[in-house]
Image (cartoon, rainbow, N blue to C red; front, side):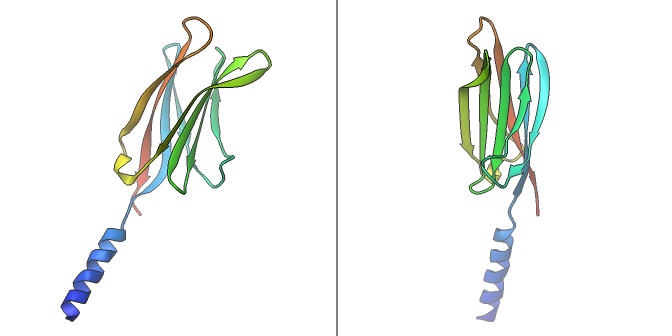
Length: 126
């Protein structure tokens, strides 16, 4: 009986060894120029990492810890303020580690002006 307990305890310990998200790396392309942005996990929903581009786009993202969720926002400069034109929210799991989280292309209100991006979840093993 004690062998069964020991085996069960070992299995539970192995199952608890998970993967923790350390950050998300997003590659953003504007006018054929590639920019990289690293998004660290946020303690509050108000922490946002952002990039501003001279063609009117703003790209922002946040990585929420509980539940593990990536949110990305794309804005366009409209005279005196940025206007939200695209939102993407993805709940993530450890199976997403190192894999692309989708390809997104957003077109601005101005003719032939676009931003494309993809992100990758970077994970550390505890």
